[in-house]
Image 1 (spheres, rainbow, N blue to C red):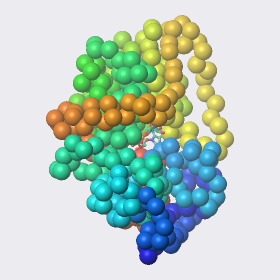
Image 2: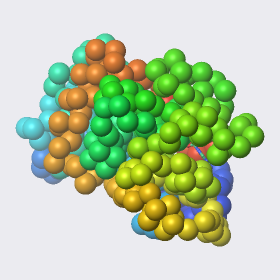
Image 3: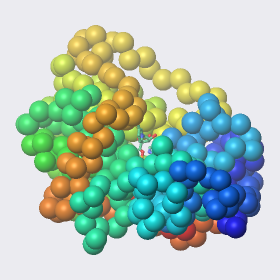
Length: 332
Ligand code: NDP
């Protein structure tokens, strides 16, 4: 018999999450030997901590639910012919060390995944965040060679891929992040211009200096004040992909900012929100493109690995505070 550990949402977050909002539970899993037709027993190796968990918990979870999330897991026992013991999958089974699945929501890692490539990347660059960058840029920003792309939270899981894909696509890339080390990293991975949004005297000036002609595409991960300033520096017919609004996720009282209509009208902008699952039917296409670029060294990956399942809340809160460079993951 396996006893799984799981983190539950003890109390809905009020403002920034606190350690006391989480509870570590032990859950006894049923033995697959008795019944359990087509069932699998899996162990999580790496778990993802993502910004969406904060607003999602508010909308879709109730207190006592296991925290939502994805993992790279190994199959320990299988009564399902589609999944062999020892295979690695991406699961959507929440913050759990072990779980039982019927396989319906599991995705095997691509069969051409190189042995030398960390499997945790299936939660980052070659996973959901990478796909977000890929489809957001191609389908929402509709970037074209020679254009200028702006991305914020640029040193994170999504942003770092956005910048590198925009370079591959022949664009000039401007990124901003919340520390000088992150800015140095952005320059190292090929961003044309990068700045620390926390230390510049004027965001408006920093954006203007980085691209005096303005921006064709804005991949917005942050929302709030940054977006209100950036929208005024879009070029005519510019496209804004509204991917995330992390600067607003922990607000108890919604922020009020300038309204978007005037710049949208006079610059004839397009602004579109999106959720990456819109392109689920093209997941394989996106993953193969990302995997190829990573293997060829054209897209560099960095991971912020926190050791220990007991540190999941700390890793989650750290990511929300900006402690991560690249994708924040937890190694069980
Ligand atoms: P990151 O790896 O970028 O981690 C979050 C980062 O956000 C932090 O490292 C921090 O970096 C930055 N940040 C935190 N608070 C603020 C703030 N107040 N202002 C500006 N930046 C802040 O996370 P992801 O790459 O996973 O996600 C990035 C964004 O994309 C999020 O908004 C997320 O919700 C969204 N997203 C949307 C998806 C979709 O389908 N629409 C799918 C996946 C992600 P720094 O040090 O630079 O401040």
